[in-house]
Length: 418
Image 1 (cartoon, rainbow, N blue to C red):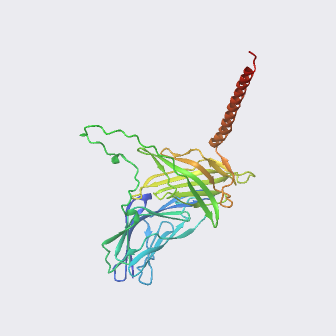
Image 2: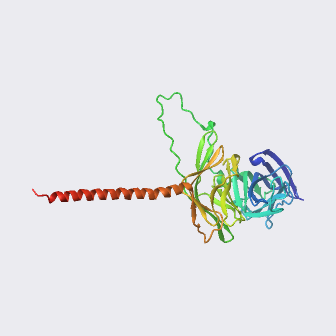
């Protein structure tokens, strides 16, 4: 009979517990070993048709039913259960030379009111996603210290500090490691600056180093994002995004649209656009419809959530939200547009600057933006353009008139008698 040993380590990201699982076969030899940390960010709908973010982590009351060793014909399974009806599992298959994870199954229970207060949908919700783990040589240990994430169906799963080996041979954990792509030293991870990162100049320098002026951060590139409901586009967004983080020192971070993916939800009265820039930065924009019962209905931006993670160990650098916005207001069925820079104050330590914004979270037709309602800053520009053109035409008319007067005077002078 297979046996599962389970231990809990110190708390980390989102107060999640480190987990060590050692599955043994009938001869009490290890056949599947894993040690990792994980947490979940879940967007759910409330009874008031708003959407909220819930954080779900492994707690101390974890069980481990259903894990199996697997063999040449049967997949191995690593399964844990925790909290009020939540569970997570991943299955592994092997060839003659390699093993790899296939599918992750995650079930969260919205009856857990401590995690999902005022949830509209009650009961267990299950999602199944394809694991991105690449094949690993048999008898090798798969290691990934950096944070990895998988997004699907309003759920972002975070994993870090992972050590894993499926189909362990002869009960002995392998000595060779197979590292994930995130752990390879091809590029240095982005780390927010601290005082410890500042290098001071040597006191033995004979002449002072030339003072260099920091290069100003350029405006971010504009990205195009969309969401689908079935085969139809239900949300369109075009925007350049820049984060202004004020911690020890101000830091401007441009969101690169080339590495940013879009996910989220569409609804009749609420919609959420979730952006993941691929560098452990997550931004959620939530839109709602006001005056839902009136003839003329409008939408606006109500809430913004931002999470910045340390790319090295998955710890939270910054988590901020503001659910009291009343910005980007436009008629339902129209789009909102603002070409000029705008600033969203999330909290004292975080601002979001937007550039070349155009957004339509409801009633998108034929995959195209509807007629835009422009922001006041852009309308000022539209007023200035005809004024400037009018002034230029006025000066031109005056110049023509002066030239005409001078021409007539010269003509009269030519016909005077001597």
